Length: 519
Figure 1 (cartoon, helix red, strand yellow):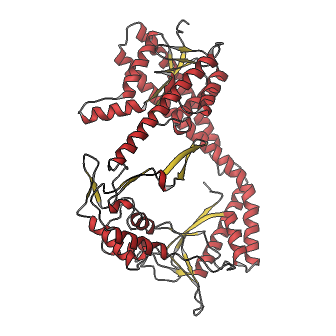
Figure 2 (cartoon, one colour):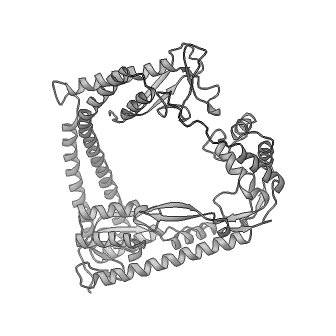
Figure 3 (cartoon, helix red, strand yellow):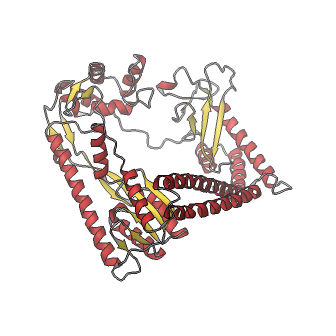
């Protein structure tokens, strides 16, 4: 098949795993290696030689075998439906995707239905050709098998490394450092903390107590995003056999379902275990005693028919840490109490009388109801909206985009006539593409805002009667479970804040997050 010329095209760029490895090697040797830029220049050279008009360049930053993991290929496929072009220019067919049969079907359908050709520097794939399905199917199958082979080699390499006692996790376990040979060495600054955790657990202290003690000592948790230790991080350390000198790999398997990976625990006999791989931080006796104490602290609930007494259960959250506020009944006092029990909020967040918080939430919902009523009963329907102005702005921006696209098309003429060299051509084109992308993004944002506002106005009509019914029913019942269920129909959550220097009983703040979000 002769190569087509003067086509309107999209360019699609994506790194392969091999490219990523080569870039890493280049960085280690102090060299500069940019795969996407090299491919961009190659494909621009093809476009120049064959006089193609580049409509848009899609550069995939993330790596992933599946279409669902790569946002740029998803944008490209949607563009083929909305704004089809003559062809997509790509380095090789497998750059578009070499996932499973579902991916192959998505790509096949998108290109066949839009009639879009796939052009590489050496090949042409035309969906109008009688051999399209055969060639496309075989090429996709070969690419898939190659990916499987690469994955198997990587997995075998990981298993081999674990069998040699090497630590191949993303980060070494807390309490260890890792040398250039991937061997674990005790970290002098944190190894003693690990041993202290095991000893405290063995001596009968719970996870919450250990976490609070570590916070009191000013020891930073392993996760740099957290300011305080969590009970779950204590459990992860207590159960980690790395602390008795073992390297374990393959405890879980990841199976892809509907484009998403699901974790599946594997039986111990399928794990790769290397004992005495490095210096242990605790003895086996201490490890087993701590784990026995950890498991022995759990007790099944003996309450089977307890009724809900907290009307705000699952709704009221601490604004500081995000955790659910704890309800504390006080039979010996006039009012029940609500407070945050997380260690990080101690001395920062004060509790309050439950009744006051509940009343303030209902008052806020009533205020919201009347504000929405005022909006829907406005005499001038355009008084509370700028949709007409945004629509005019969209049309102006679309006209600008059209003018810029003409300029971009003219660049090829200048290139052919020698007025521009390749560097000037690329610079001018990049500037135009950036301006077009900026305008397109602004148009998209405005269209989204219009859609949200129109949707909001529509939702108000549905939300108002429901909110009215909830407020009425709430005032007519004393059943806590009923009240809780009513609130959850109109509220996603409510956040609570009361600083330590707020002393008046009613001095606290709440923020309502309704299931309908007023913009």
